[in-house]
Image (cartoon, rainbow, N blue to C red):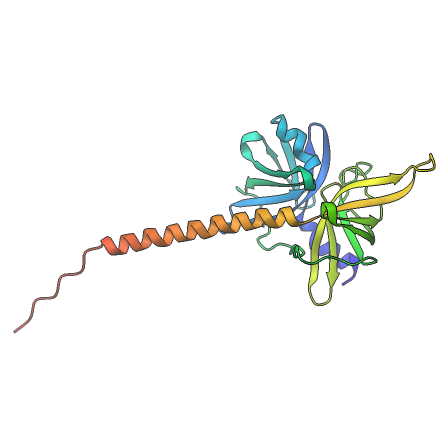
Length: 241
């Protein structure tokens, strides 16, 4: 699959995140079984300040066609600062959102050096334009469950999905862009490396949602069983002689 096809497939899931102190990128990654509660994955540093100070967060959906303002009471944010990862949980209400998501790369799968990946985001220099970037895996960083990538990440792209595609598995999300480290060793600012955090935190939150769905389904089954057991048995019909 060519990159333009991958971008067409993934773009509807990408969101722009605005806070009172900056902006970033995220992607819709999960919903509950009833399809009324959704989760957006992003980088922790995109939303952490707003969350700490109970500030509003504005989410632009569907290539900026729909927008919602999430105040502190309108959301729950699961943050893992060590992995610079966050998931914003909110109610769907009347939003038109997808119900099938781009799969996350399994945590047990690690990409090899030299594999080409791409990422999407809203860079600060073109804040309302979804842009595509690409590069190669330079090295895995096992100590922080991340990858170093030979490619550029610009302010505003933080939290954007890092994509990988194969003929057998299709498009998968490898992680999210969290930083760019420029090379200043010689005194000048030279090309550096991007850092992509893996999807382990997002898998964890998705598993939590599944557990809640399973518990709710079991509760409903028990309630239904209780109702059936409490219903009186029908009286036998009188015998006709």
